[in-house]
Structures are given as structure tokens and as C-alpha cells.
Length: 413
Image (tube, rainbow, N blue to C red; front, side):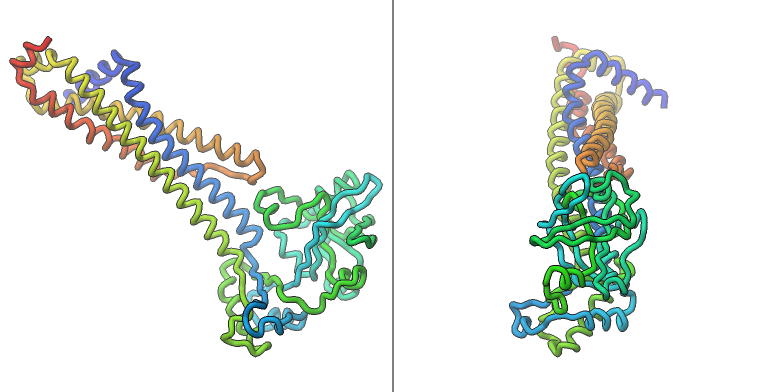
């Protein structure tokens, strides 16, 4: 044990005496290790954050639609009776609704006129956006059946219109296709600022959720039949079974079993596809980082060969004094390993800090709360790999030093 400590001291002394050269040797290892940890940790954090946001937004529902390109597809138009049948007969269903979304409206208040993005649906539309209500309530089934001019808006919309979120019971005018209607605010929904939300939902200065029956009574749209609707499940784990049961029920009602007229678009599957793409990108960049590690290892071998040449006389003296071949080999091998371990440690620190920095920037740009996921397995693997690099690329210079003839080494100038 004492001999090993002595070898470590000698190796550290040689590294210290050639600081600049040793640092440049470590640089390739540092870049490779830090790149691997940064990419994996930041990639896992961003993937986890985006997947979590998408799962919160679209993980609990599926969309059914009639494929008009299939023979008989044009004849299938869904009705509220179909939705009621699914809710009654299929287990683990919270509700279903047809959705009409617009981005061409405007909302007026005493603070001015703002762009409005109204969404029309029945009372189950409350499950479409999973952000909870901050104040008030959602409109009821009776209000939907009566075509009551009520609405739910977001906290940001309330502040735009009135400068406050204490607006339950206040009126707001909304104009759509030249027709202006007055709506009573019954609920305020919490804001959701994630980038995923902006991809899924309508975006506007004022976001409104309104009973779908108003769309027909006030604006003249025909909403009794529709070619698509959204089905909300009790949990994302129920999606597969609920989709299958609901599809079988609808195919039986329209006598189109086996014709693939009724299609199911599973929003949750999009999360898996995004995760797969991110995984491929991460693997590709890790391969690039691995190349940097190999280049760093070649640098270690090169510097160790230079060290052997410079210390040829020292090696000769040690062998003349009785140093064994194994001792010489172990000394130079230890020096190579220490260089790579120091480079690996610095790379780990920079990689973790870099990953946290990247995730902080991602959070600041509106991607939601993104936190770096530092996998201990990746850190240990990076450390082990850096050690293997040192051993692998240090063996040749160490063997060359160990096999030097004492006489030839002592003659070296």
C-alpha cells in the first residue's frame, strides 16, 4: 500500500511540474466527460419536463373522428346521443364533448379591446384544459342546455380585461364574425404558461370557454352533428381500454364494424414519439462526445510517450538500482490514470453545472419548470470510462518505459 501511495505522489509531482502540458492533455477528457453528462442530464430533464407538461395537458383524453376518405365515412356524423351512450356504457369515462375553437374573436372592456380565443363545448370541456379553477365554478349542464351566455376565462385574461382576478359575476363583450354578445364570467382558470400549452390550446390575449349551444343560438352555427369529438378518461392508464370499448360501441351504432371508418387519435402516443426523438438526439450527441473522449485518450498516450522519452535516464537509474519492470510499468500507468481521473472529475463538475445552466435557460424561455436529471449511473459510467481510457492509452507508454534496457537508458542524453 505504501508503494502505491509513493507512485501516486511521484505521478502528481510529474503532473505538477508540467502544468500546461498536463492541462492540455486533460482537456480532451474534460470535454468528452462534460459533454456526455451535460447532454444526458439536460436531455433527460428537458424530456421529463416536456413529457410531464404534455401528459398533464393531453395525457387523459383521446379524439374520435370519422375518416371521410374511407368508403362510408361521409355518412358518419356523431351526435350528443353518441356521447351520452359512451358515458353511460363505457367504464372509466369522465365525459365527452365536441369542440369548436376560434382565434378570430375580440373582447371588449373598459380597459380596451383585446384579441379573443373562444372555445365552445359542453360542460365536460372543463377536462380539456387541466389547469384548475382559481375562482368561481364551471358552467353546468343546465346552463349548456339553455344556451346561457356564461364563460370561464383565465387569470391573465381577467387582468387584461379588468386589471384584477376578482371578476366573478362581471360582464364581458365578445365579438365573433361581426356579432357581439355579452357574457357573464362564472369562473377563473389558473394560467398555464408552458410551451406545450401554447402548442395545444388556442392562444390570445383573452381566452374564453363558452357553452357550445351559444354558438348555434347566437352565431348561427349548426352544432347538432359533428365529425369529431374528445373523450376524457379517468386516468391515462385507461385510455387504451376506453378507446377500444368506445370505438366498438360507435361502430355498432353506425354499422361500420371492420371498415375503419371511425378512427382514434391518441394524444398520449405523441408524448412517446417526442420522447423517442429526444432519445435518438441524445444518443447521437453522446456518440460525438465519445469521439472526443477517444481523442483525449490519444492525447494522454502522446503525452506519456513524451514523458517516457524525457525521463529515459531516470528510468535507467531506477532499473540500475533494482527497480523491477512491473514497478516502472505501474508508475507510468498510474500517472496516465491520474491524469484521466482528474480530467474526468473536472468534466463531471462542468457537465453537471452545464446541465443545470441549460435547464435554467430552457425554463426562462417559457418551456415550463425544467430541472436537470443527473443520473448517478451516468456519472459512475463516465468516471469508469475515463479510468479505462487512462489505462488503455497508458499501457503502451508504460510498457515502453518498463522494457527499456538499463544500459541504453543510462546512455541516453
